Image 1 (tube, one colour):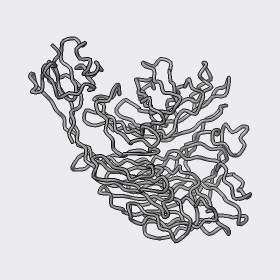
Image 2: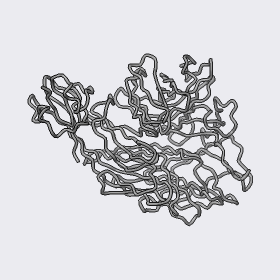
Image 3: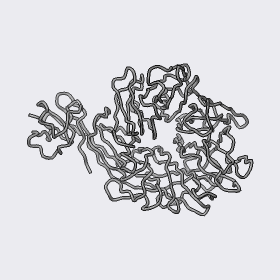
Image 4: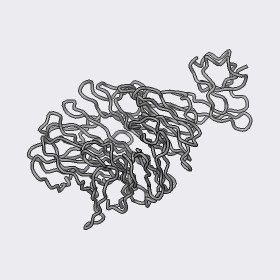
Length: 574
């Protein structure tokens, strides 16, 4: 289907430039467990040719088979509970949706659904995740099975059969799915013995970044000391910040960390925040023009100061005790070059399902947010609501100033990613719990009003991101989500994905976006008097020639005389 998209610029006196796009659904896949048990996708990343997906699949026995699009990706793990064990699975998928290989846990389960990845320059992938012994008595040996079927045993001291230990696992898989190396971070945390209950594991990984130079950065928040190898014989332990009064269960306290590893997974440097605060965290990392940008959160303690590197920020103003969103600009050796924070006027946790994108001089910060932000010196104010809705705001990569933003104003909605095309900006969002996975189309990067909205997946519970790969046909967009308990129709209506009954299911949807730049001359063929224009709907958005919002077609009679754009057509108001 082809759509006209709003005018972006006027070249010279009267040459117009805008873009048309077409969408085509290529394939959809569901990650399924036997007995229709729950599956969840945690992360999705891609290089130029393949897609990597990390996920958990609930299982009850070792005889179960876990599948992606009907193809086996892992076996189950036995459990002594009724809820099952969450098997860790990482898969590699080709552009056509073909399964290349998978790596999965055996005799163990993922400690949380935080399992983040980054593709490496040699075609492989690095993943970091929490792991613990499966809920079974006696505790079994555990291993990771690679894409060739080879088991890599994990040596793990077990005090007794009811103990469950936590470890931060970081591994590198090759382009062929072989485990190249595996490093475990010992976490100073006593095992849980009473009824094998689960408490906070003492750390939370939120982002992984691998650079072309071969270095790897792992970031998140910790509540307990972490010890990792600096070589085959030596190790480094670093203590957490901001854990005063921690009761051993809450994950809303603790301090941010970013650890730099070499190409073999050995620690080279650790960056932490110092001073006194209630919490800090790192949620996303991206590389741009030789620097690393890290998005996070920070909650001040009253009358205190914190420092990241040599840059200090302090409590100031009535909103400073609320959780702020932060952006740090770092060198690749983790030297702090700049640090910005954006206080909220809402005194609650402000962001879920966070994402960050960098395009040109802009940084886009987005997610499902409960946020009201008014940064000093900003050009605009971006306001969310108390209901957690889709919010994105755009800040300068040069000085951190806020350039603008958009709140969708829909209950439990969230933005999952952004793609900047030839002329248009595409925002991907969840509209509500159980609502559709949508794509909003904007004629520029100001994100004032969408010119079109497309439904890509019929019904999702939460969103897990989108990646893009260039192909001969256009840009392949692959979206990840947790879908509701139904067969989900994808864009175009010809392909559905998911299961009819059971529990929520991780799904993937691949759609090709093809753009065509359009330029008109002094007398565009589609220049039409507004009183004779019958093909543009009354609710179509109208823009002036600078791309500014002018109103709706139903209000066009109130506009001044001149040229405008609506419904992908240049119109004349006389």
